[in-house]
Every structure is written in C-alpha cells, then in structure tokens.
Length: 422
Image 1 (cartoon, rainbow, N blue to C red):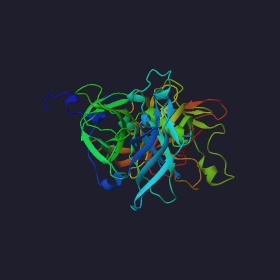
Image 2 (cartoon, rainbow, N blue to C red; image 1 turned 60 degrees about the vertical axis):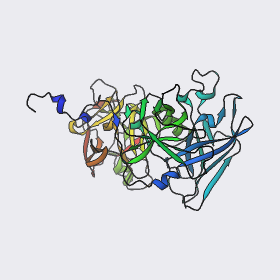
Image 3 (cartoon, helix red, strand yellow; image 1 turned 90 degrees about the vertical axis):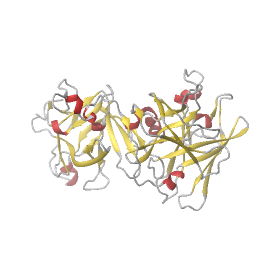
Image 4 (tube, rainbow, N blue to C red; image 1 turned 60 degrees about the horizontal axis):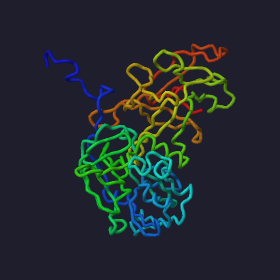
C-alpha cells in the first residue's frame, strides 16, 4: 500500500464521526420464542370494535411486562377519547395456550399515550413520529423475561443495511400466530423510520426490528403506510427520548437523571469503625474546569443522566452517562487513561455496571469498560474500570480539583473503583 493515505486503510470504527450503519446477523435465536413477543389487541374505539398489534420489550421488571404499540390503537383523534376494553392476547410462557388480559378503562399506571399525538395544541398531532404509546400488564411470579431488545446505538444509527422486519397481526390473524414481512430500509430520520415493507390493516403497532449483535432489537413502532406512491411504510423510531419516556413512566431506576458520580468509601462500608478513605464532603467526577478531560473534585461535580444503552436477556445490559446540562456523552479512553466529553455518542461511551460488593444490598457499582471487536460489534478481550482518588488534594480546601481520574485493568481489588449516583 505504498503511497496510500492513512485514511485509505484506517478502520472506520476508529473514526468517531464516520457514518454508522447496522450490519445484520442473528446468532442462536429462538425464532418460536420471538413469535410470543408480539401481542394482538382487540379494543373499542368510537363505538366500534377494532384490532391492532403491539410487542413486548425486554425491560426486566419483577411484576410487569411492558408493551409498545401505536398511539392510534389507544386513542381516537376524531372523538378525542381513549380506547376502552383493550384485550391483549399473547402465547403463554409455558406453551399451554393463549394468555389474555383486558384493560377495561385506561389509567395512568396501565396505559401511556404520547401527548403530542393527541393534544389539540400539538403541531405534530397525529404524525407518525409521535404515534406511539406504552402499556403494562401483570407478570406472574416465575414467568420468564420476554421481548425485543432496546439499543441506544440503534436509535442513532444512520442507516440499516440488512433487512428490516415487521412482526404483527392482520385483522383475521389468530392470537399467537403473528405474520412477518421483511424489506429494505428506505430512510432513517431522527424520529421516524421508513422501509419498503407492504402492510395491511391490523398490523399498526407492530414491532419493526433488525438483527443486531446477534439478536433481534426493536427500532420502530409501525404506524402508517407510505405517504405517497412508491414511498416507504412509516414507523415511530425508538429514540433516546422515547426510551426516557418509557422508563420515567415505569418509574424504573435504570434511568437516573441529574445525578453526580461519587466515589464510595468501600473500606468504611465493609468495616464499620474504620477511618474514612474518602473526603467527608464527597469526591466527584467533574468537568467544571477547561482541562478537556475528567478530574476529581471535592464536594460537587458534573451532573449526568444515567441511561440504559442496551437491554436484552442474554447480552449484558449496557449504560451511558450524558452530561445533564451540555448533552455531551462521557467517553472512556483506556489507551489515554482518561475520560472526556464527546458531542456524538459512540461505542466507547458504553459501560456495564458491576454491582458485586461485600454486602448484596449496597447501592454502588463499578463502571466496567470492555474492549470491543469493531467488526463483530461484540465485547471481547480485556476490560477496564473507572478509578478516582484524592491523594493530592487538601481535604480542607472546598471544591479543590486534581487529575486523579484513571482507567485500570478489571477485575481489581482497588478500593477506589466503586461509585454511587448522588
């Protein structure tokens, strides 16, 4: 390659600004189990019985299952009234038949309809981008997890290169027997996805899913046919904003907003009576000064939002931290032994939480950053963990800072790698 420019042979994954497309591929997926992730709705709307589709997403709650669907299954724009007698049918987890659950009247706890879809003052009223809603139904003790995965990475993908799939129910489809169609991605917009898949009545609210990291992940909620002849069918994209909405509605602690990352004094927690190793007013991750990388700060620190980045039974749950004020993403750079804030999200912003501790109930965790195989989109190799301490700070000086933030090999017995969100 004599004479070639560096950019000609550089791996695209090294460039944070490169367009991100999603490569296809499934690995050991139980296709029959996937059929049980779609639900059929029968409901009353404007005095008439209607049918629609929805799907489970794999948000692991102890007492509930979570379903996503189109808002127009849940609300009438014509009469400005909610649908009633929503009958939800789906296969039993034991394979013994069809389960059924009915929501006679919508409540704030049972159904969420996106307000911009139906509020008369909304400039987007009735548009595909806002045509979505959520439901929750009881999960019996011992019932397994079920549902399509959710990925923040897919929410920011520029394009889906493999087939996109719709799984749902036509008007006359039997519960537990969804149909599936596939087609190419036409276009990805910030809050809408278009795809060349033919759809029929009853299919609204169905999952639009893609193959990602070897598993099926939901990327949109189908809600409309093509806008014009030759155009693509349309769905509300599962965005960061939508994911935040569902977690807030559920009250799920996986999402934490406007919190600071604080070192936990593990020695004092493990052995009551031991002198504290951490500053009395707390030691926090901070980007308050203009150094360009993260530093430790006494007493206060930068506020972040902790957001689930990947949820699916099997692959590890991943998280990201987003600066609450600036909207920049916390990025881990193990080779430079530092953390920085980035304008654009990328894989190096994700981490998993190791919550193992001397006692099982302690509310702390380590931020573990795995090495990645850029060609297979999976975790591999060595991992690193965030570490912060205050050896060079005067504990009597308020809001003092130092550059004692590092990334060390994981696992480790170090005492300064456990954090809480305060």
